[in-house]
Length: 639
Image (tube, rainbow, N blue to C red):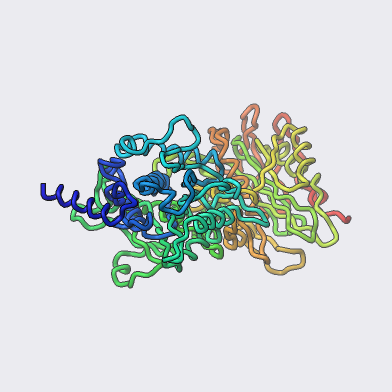
């Protein structure tokens, strides 16, 4: 009874001191409780803490929240949409507790006070944020009793006293005509961006200017509203990262960065079992986000915690071991730095070539070399011949001029499916990697490159299912391949990150192997380089693409990403084929009859492997010692 009297007394005192209100607004903690949203037991601990930090432990009669600007970011699944579905209704609740909101904010009678939901598109705002907010209000005891919206409007929430909730997009015109007191920008790193304009930045500035111009408080020198930016920080140079640095220096702003385990909470709560050991201590490990390394607990206990060390539940240990960049971005909410390597675990790259050498080692202990070192006329070795009937995927990174990039070519297949943390994923093997760099004053003839593909299919017995390529010059090549019944398609690994993400994931999960391709970068050089390793080590994520430094290249790496992307996306490559019984490269299987044919021994570079006696139907058996891929096929020609 004494508690009820205390609450009533506090309520009466608030109304006496603040006659503009007909009811004391709830604190954000009370707002989660049974008299308001009635969701207190379902709100994650991390979200609850973030809400209290932004709106405060107590209610203010002057402003909606403790801060004027806020940014909420973190890993995937931390509850950003849930956060928005609580924040917007709370702001509507606070304003609705005023007797006359327009008079309180010095607006004309009938002026609409709006709260905006902004996403990449208006439909996205409606389907994701708007739907959750609407559902939250529909099930709220307080809104049902005091302040329900007009359900005749489907795309807006219009409450009594001309208080509206509206969805919108990045365009500044979405906000015209409204007195915006508060708003939420969702997925800001995914908004449209052009060479001349960042729509996320422009939209933020427009909304903030509208809040500031209509709801400015002369006493504080700031506005009385709240603008919240939520979303995953997808890149270190994006809008979210820049806004985070800006708001961290703003005394009237708050930045909340939340990992998935911070959101869920370390201790058991609700249906979440927590991340604790039986003795109540945290079941965790320490991770160095800069070096991408797990720190042994014995070492971590002797180190002073710093900004590069994070404590992670052991439940996520495999994620950080297998793909640290993805784990940091998706689980910890830490985007890759713009200057850090795209593939930071260089040892995993080396393991790929080691696995290839071990699986392709011949009986005499030697390892076949698929492609020669000549950068202008790289010859396919004798080992490049089908040893099974598995479907192959190829990718061409097209270039023609000797003054620019080199042309890259790669071919690979799915050898088997392997279990990765309970999920079956393709194990990918590259048959060869190839790079052609035209000498100055010459060009690479794409007709010659097509001939390589024809010979791989017709002479060397490979079952080539598809060839993808990029470059504006690819149209004719695709048409010519299609005429030869070789499926081809356009695929640019520069316009999307998925191919490189697939490649990196396969490398980190140790389910890919490729040969150690040694070549000269240019004719006349005296030192060969392991080109695939060099390119993969030098890449960094730059905006919406993976790119190389100004002095580097990515012709071979692009081909590898294209092949992996194709193999990962098409289940047809996962079908089991008849494998060579006596070792890789010694028996081929015809794609139509699947009958074996014996080939001569694999020796050195410079020649090609042919049937030692008679060939299969549809395969000719050249004279031993002749060249299957003659120099003329890939020799650059003068302009």
